[in-house]
Length: 423
Ligand SMILES: *Cc1c(COP(=O)(O)O)cnc(C)c1O
Ligand SMILES: [Zn+2]
Image 1 (cartoon, helix red, strand yellow):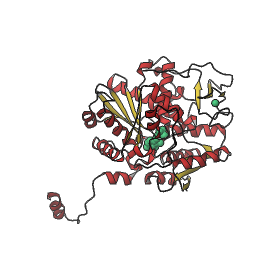
Image 2 (cartoon, protein in one colour):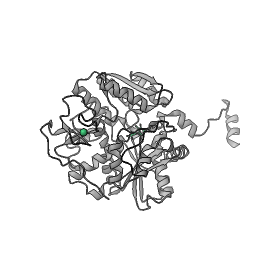
Image 3 (cartoon, rainbow, N blue to C red):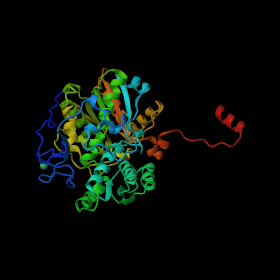
Image 4 (spheres, protein in one colour):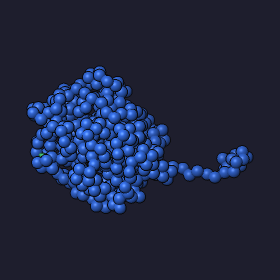
């Protein structure tokens, strides 16, 4: 494995605030974290990331503040506390049937659907909404395939902030719209796909009309780092070892970027040897696979797919904003990216359900990808693997019902019920 530590040990610049600053991943620009709103580098428009003067070790986690959840990892985050409704601390499930079937040395499923609003987006929002308060902004906004809007609506409500969400009309699963709606967000249904929504909301943010809480926002990714920290701690608790590989669905590639950052910081802290960093393996739907294309072609940039389609609406994304962070994440950990069909996604969703884990279609892409890569031999039988399942089954009730068994009508009569059952 070739893990080049592309940052965390850089000298602390004068602009640091309490040991925290922002840096451009392209040109090295640095700036203070909380003095003004910034989403991209003022010099070169590159992606920004949060940097720290030092990095905590496993022993530091949970020492101060909460023992569990995102804020267990406060020492690895840019603020001490968030707008919190107990996000994180999600289960790391055994899935014996799938483990047997694919044949790996150990398999666990990190079920992020068990967060307060039913997806990992909560981990980013607890932090992002707190930073918004620090910056003194009044209106929070995002473009979303659904889960970001559900999480922002919920955390924004909790913070007493105005929330605006832009959704691709007709392409958001029912549970997610219902959440945004009940939590009181203003919901704009855009005649376009997710990437169009992001273009519009980015313009609004640039014009100072709203604070952007898409994963372009570097603070959100800091919260999502805690997925990686929990996976390592949880896997070691259960098996005594660290996982070799993490397989995850990829949309805007925020998680891919965030997990890599979590691991690089553990390497910088001396907690993880570079060769212990899990191999990051991204999975996309065939109908929305620009990252897979870039990895296969060895390209430095992803090509924007204008037409995208998949049953996995959460990853129905044609231009992953975090690709400049995520391509190195995959390459430098020795990982790969793979596309799976909608049929394979639905099959994997059923397989997870048989092991008692209910997920939305995008989440099942991870298991579908694992199956594909085991068949091709890319993943070997001696590997310890974690699949990330990103959202809950109830997020997309229509997809679940379509993938599941048909209800059977029957009269309210025991004999009729028995005769139906004996058929
Ligand atoms: C947001 C989301 C994704 C995509 O995550 P990225 O970090 O943007 O790659 C995948 N699955 C679900 C359920 C999501 O809500
Ligand atoms: Zn720059």
